[in-house]
Image (cartoon, rainbow, N blue to C red; front, side):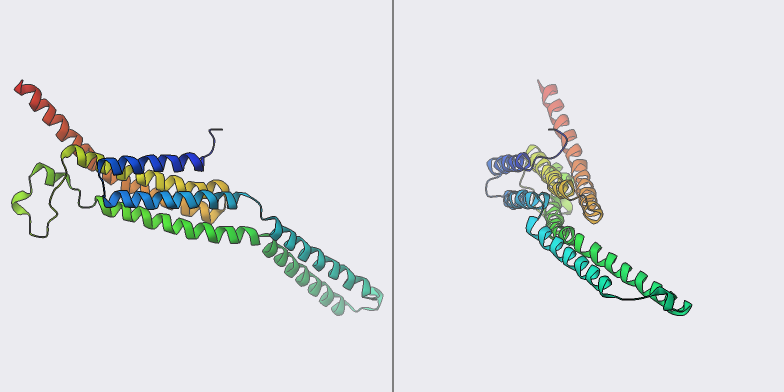
Length: 243
C-alpha cells in the first residue's frame, strides 16, 4: 500500500499547492506554471495507467505473426527431401552455416517483435519526460531573480535601471521560494511514475537525470531560503530587544 507512488494522491498534492500559490500570490506567473504542472500530472496519470496495462490487441497480433512464421518454417522443413548421405563435407558445412544464420535471423526477429510493446511505451514515456525536464527549467527561471540581497537593501546603491526591483517582503519571498522547491520535488515525483510502471533501463536513466536536476535546482533555492530564515530570526530578535 505504501510501496509505490499513487498518481491520484500526487495530483491532489499539486492541486492543493496550486490553491496555496493562487491564494498568496494571485495572478502570479508561478501559479500559472503550477497549473501547467497540474495538467501534466493529470495526463501523466492516464498515461501511466496506459503504460501499466498490457496492450492485449498488440500482443495477440504479435503472437499470430510468430505462430504463422513458425508454421511456415515447419512447413518448409517438411517439404525438403534431403539425404544427408549424399552431401559432401563442404556442402554439409554450408548447410549448417546457412541454418545457423537463419536461426539467428529468426531469433532477432522474435526479439524485435516481442519488444514492440516496450518500444512503443518507451517512446511515449520519453516524450513526456522531456516535457517534465522543460517544466523544471521553467520553475527555475521563476526563482533566478529572487535574490535575498535585494530584500536586505545591501545592493540598492549599485542597482542599474534594468535590475529587478524587490516587490516581496522577506516572509513572502521565503514562501515563494518554498513553493518553487515543492514544485520541483513534485516534478520529480511525476517522472518517477513512469519508472514505476515501465522498469526500462533507458526510462530509469532518464528519470534519474530528472530527479538529479530537480534536486540540484531545489538545493540552490534552499540556500536562499536559509539566508532569508536567518534574516527573519534576526528581525524577531531585534524586535524582542526593543521591548
